[in-house]
Amino acid sequence: EPEVTQTPSHQVTQMGQEVILRCVPISNHLYFYWYRQILGQKVEFLVSFYNNEISEKSEIFDDQFSVERPDGSNFTLKIRSTKLEDSAMYFCASRSTDTQYFGPGTRLTVL
Amino acid sequence: RKEVEQDPGPFNVPEGATVAFNCTYSNSASQSFFWYRQDCRKEPKLLMSVYSSGNEDGRFTAQLNRASQYISLLIRDSKLSDSATYLCVVHYSSYKLIFGSGTRLLVRP
Image 1 (cartoon, each protein chain N blue to C red):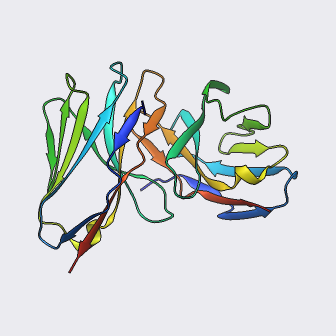
Image 2 (cartoon, one colour; image 1 turned 90 degrees about the horizontal axis):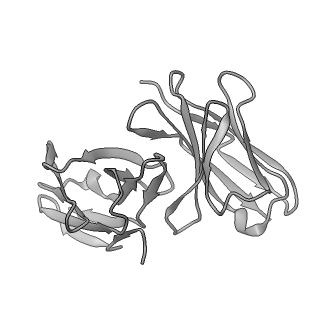
């Protein structure tokens, strides 16, 4: 069964550093998403991406965040200058019809 | 008012019990509704979509009441493996998913 994959599974970084989280969506899907979940809190929408551009973003997704689909398979989330409060699980998702399928997540720890 | 509200639980039930979770949503323009399951520190996984007519998948039954903006999930004959957090999820026309905080279920032997 096709699945969304994410790397790395765990990323530790120093405050102020840039991080890039990587995702490989399911191959025939056209819509891509990033969500985050701070420990003990609910899953929150960050951004949706379709046809090589952002279709919607949340208030969380400020100028420090960017997304890119650099080739036909990868979908990345970049945080330019990490803050302590960016520590969370980051989930990538993709969809073709109604259902979004989530990757296993990247745990980001900012020290 | 929160967009999607759930009782956080935990619901602690014996194996074989029937348990029901409720959820309310605030935006009447919501178009689709889902129950996802999330195990500790794992990704959300789709359990089932929720339709106005109600739908069943094995031991799981979901109901939607658009007039009351209310969604429910019923689990019959609970198994130990059902222990997880159940997430009520809605989406609007943008296909952005809005998650509730989840209801935690613990099934004991």
